[in-house]
Amino acid sequence: MVVRIRGSGFGGERTPLPRLSKGEGAKTPLPESRILTADALLRIFQILHYLCTMPSIRQEKFARLLQRDLSTIIQQRTHSFFEGKMIMVNDVEVSPDLGYAKVYLGFINQNEKDYLLGLVQFHSKELRHELAQKIRNEVRKIPELTFYIDNTLDNALKMEKILEKLKENDELK
Image: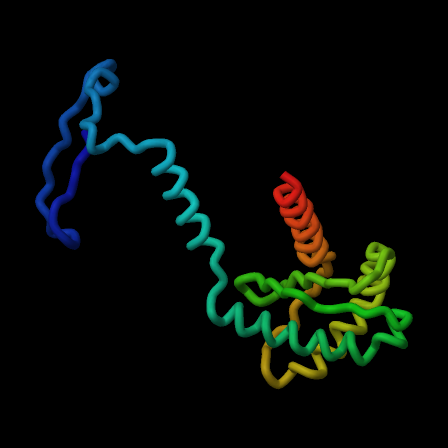
């Protein structure tokens, strides 16, 4: 027997739930107000996904700290580590426990992005050590750094070219 408890706490009133026969639940239609459309369900899942993956204020502050300090370290080590190539730290995402950080790097006018990413990954221990020296009084735990290529600048340039072509086509017509 299934029991529903009404009221708050353990002192609520107990009433048995009615039992349904095998096919009875499927025959009972839902009222129109209870049926959700596919668009409504999609919107609900989008909102839930956004709320569950939204970084906390602490994560955002820590990510900005890492971005600022990593940018200065990479800028200082450009000639010794990265052969004078220009590398930018575009974004940093931090895990909820602040133990892991995804660092998105942008490379200005460089065709050898994979090679430069390999150089950054090769020197990641030194970068993490220098980062630890800079922020050791501000944080308890120095995060593990993983580096990724950030293609947002390339994608923006491609979109800009496409929009220019569309504008030229409209002017010709």
